[in-house]
Amino acid sequence: MVPTKVYLGTLLLVVLLLPPLLGNYWTQVMGDIGIYIMLGIGLNVVIGFAGLLDLGYVAFFGIGAYSYALLASPQYGIHIPFWLMLPVCIALAALGGTLLGIPVLKLRGDYLAIVTLGFGEIIRIVLNNLDPVTNGPKGLLRIDPPTIGNFTVDSPMKWYYMILAGIIFSIFVADRLNNSRLGRAWVAMREDQDAAALMGINILRTKLLAFTIGASFAGIGGAIFAARQGSIFPENFGIMVSINVLCLIIIGGMGSITGVTLGAIVLIGLPEVLRDVQEYRMLAFGGLLVAMMIFRPTGFIPSARRKMEFKKEE
Image 1 (cartoon, rainbow, N blue to C red):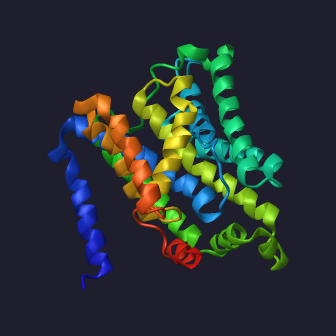
Image 2 (image 1 turned 60 degrees about the vertical axis):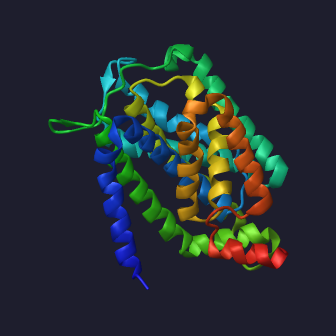
Image 3 (image 1 turned 120 degrees about the vertical axis):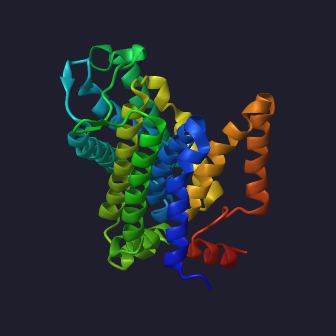
């Protein structure tokens, strides 16, 4: 049997060598997939670990993106370096998660989904209508790319490696959280909130931490997205982003970090593969979702815990 370290080392080497083999276009696509992987890892904390159905996750993505863009573009004539702004974007997105979490602490299931969906739409509408601050539908242009000395991240290949670093960091943090005391509290709350409360778990704090930490991952993705695109608009942060991230978690395997990664590759990569048959690609995409729900409802690579729970239910 191949040791895990050898397997992971080989996989990392292949991933590092991909850009020269793929060319600029597919390296750009891999960058898109990478941003969705980071978003998927963050939403997986909220839904997969803690069992809180959040349909407004795009709001934190938007907060992270606009936080950087406003202070690194000609909008105010302020150009704060990316690396100084990144922790600020993470903190503001996390604050957004806390502010969402406070009023929905007592909600569950469908009610929670509806409220979070509304929150996501409120943020998009605010970005669209707050012209003096966000420049409204015209968006923010000429956003500064990250620099390190004289080195500027300004090509698909450079962005690929930077996003890869962000993914590795996100996976490391999410894995540590999943195996921590807080991660076990999330699982207990997800399985039976009342029983978890009786066992001494502080449900309100545990929920708030899920929303806050999950949102912080979106802050990283948002800042990188804004700097990579160079210009952002309110329509970049519509409800479809939240739905896509939710779908990639369901397809990949809820609660599984590996599953989320695979789900992003399939969900974001498949439409690009099918670009030559554009009129049929949404049909293929819909067919995949239906097939997954019928034949593999736990996703491609579910977490071991989820797999056992599903077998018990059967």
